[in-house]
Structure formats: C-alpha cells, structure tokens
Image (cartoon, rainbow, N blue to C red; front, side, top):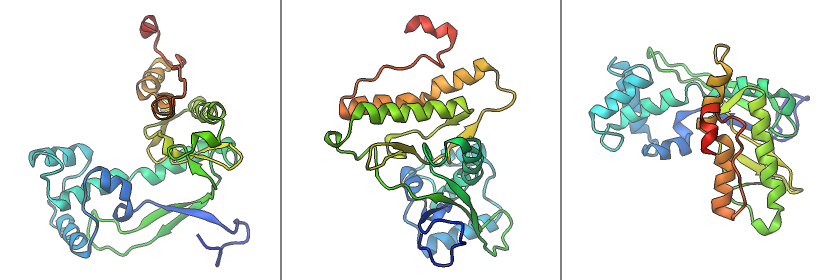
Length: 250
C-alpha cells in the first residue's frame, strides 16, 4: 500500500488485507469457482434478490449437495457459498490479533487498524461493503518456497512451532496452519500470518475439550509433518495436547 495520504502515526509501507469474496482467489480456486465477471456478479445479485438463496452454512451446503456437489452446482449458489464462508473472517482475525497483542511486531505482524469500503446495495441479505485490516509489511519468503540450503532448518521450523505453541497458550485455535502462512525474514526469524480461520477458546470449553480440539487440529503437525515431507526435516509430534486416554498409543 503506497504512503500517500496515510495518517502520520502509520509506517510508510503497510499491508491492506481486505475480505472480499470477489477477489479471494485462493478460496475461489479451492472450491472451483469461476473467475468473477460482470455477468456472474449480476447473476448473483439477482439470486439473492429473488429470496431463493439459502441462509447459513448448513442450508447452503445441503443445497449444493442437492445438485450433486460443487462441480454440478450453479455458479450463483457457489458465489453465495463463498460469501457465507468469508463473512466471519474479518471478525475472526481482529479478535485473534487483539488476543495475540503481545506477539505483534515479533512473531506476528503488527495490527494498525481496520478499514471499510462502503457499498450501497439495496438488496436485503446482500452486503457490498468490504472490511479490511492494516498490517505491518513483513519482508521475506514463505516457508513453502524457501531454499533449504539458505537457512538453518532446525532454527526456522522450531521457531515456527514455538509461535504455534504461543498462540495455543493464549487460547487460539487455528484451522488454517500451513507452511505458506509463515514468512522467514532475511536474517532467519519467522513470522506467522493469516488468522482469518482461527478462533479463540470459548469460555465454556473445558481443558479436556480444548485439548481434544487442539489435538485433532494438530496445528504443529501442519508445519512439522509438512516440513518433514518437503525438506526431510526430523519432526516428532508433541504430546502436549494429547488427551490422557490416547497417550498409550504414543
């Protein structure tokens, strides 16, 4: 993001991350959505305006299943699915960044604030406003693309696992941990990014419930096992969150 018209307390360069289904290329590609064109956007607006669009994840998923899956579902329904999928991302990420405030500037980027591009839709159930956040720019390369001969892999991957552990200690569960969500700075320190699919520990979650969720998600394994497969790094799974009744298996 260029430095024109930025408030004086902000750095000259930063990242503007927006939560816009139309340009969520990774999410769209994952679910097989067509590249967005004006005709598809108009079709989606008509679909929502008709009142036929289902509400909520379960209802939308059931409707997709009625067509036989994502490949057979009409494009306006898939557009609606992605809109529903991305809707909580802004709030998720803001909550997690605030919870991880003490890690900002070192293990995760600094969060400088939020933005909103306002829309003027008159269609009930269709929001055309786009929220966003302003983040510290992290220079470096993601773990998926590093040259293993250029870094000390033990230091790099152990640093990534340390950050994951710190997030867990602060009550964060991340459903989207992967190598590409870590950036290695030129001097070798690691920064974790992207918490849109993360959540905070709920007040009613018992220690056993929390351990079960963390164990099943296996955030550390999403890095450690992936690093072992891609780079031959030696990884041994931590039993920190292993429920007591499963420890006999390890």
